[in-house]
Length: 322
Image (cartoon, rainbow, N blue to C red; front, side, top):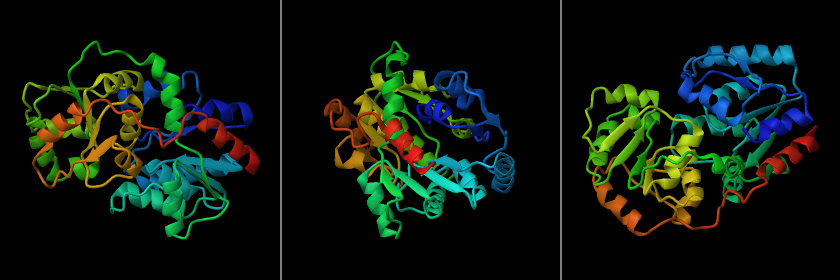
């Protein structure tokens, strides 16, 4: 949203509400500093696990502000709570229509938001098609591309060069991967990778790692900001991830991606060969897959999520509505 928010502020009386879903500075404050420096926002400081309190607090905010339109982004508990609290008001869902077709929390949230939103902004035609299969179709469903394209292009010149080469980047944070026995399977496979690994560990993951000592070729570091992560991703030989956004960014960076999940909502990356799934439940073969993907070389494919200008497309649609 960091490319859209300044535009909204110029066009509308606009308020940013940050729920506090990510509570540590290196998971929240650093992003406001790097991507939205000087942006005023309301900080609720509510844990995402307290969905009832989050919804009630947002509902109170909306009653006080009485907005004509509410924008929510993605598939987080904050987005879901915002959509629920928006009842009776015009709701816009940015990043609509993504589906991995598994009963994970993010899928439940994004599906629920899509079925109550008044304007659905899809990154790709495939996302729009998925919505049509659920009976969600019409002029209120639009394809705009992904805002990540504009964000990546805007901040790419400022990415921080890690000064290192010959490494694989790893991110791991999803509940179904970290809070289940699957975590041990993933770590076992990662330990077999025959490359140096840099591992910015999400707080949830870092807590679990305390019980699993890792070999010396895996360097666990604290979470990093967008500019440092962008540099790490750009110069990595490959990236192992369970993040949705990283799959898109890896394609733009030209970095071979291996997604540590049984499915993905970024199917376009698979069709183009920029990404491949590794099912952690199979429990073998990750090391060979990493070598194979690196040997294939850098990724150079058309970007299915846009070529730039996605922010302006969304802004134009919002101006049409209001």
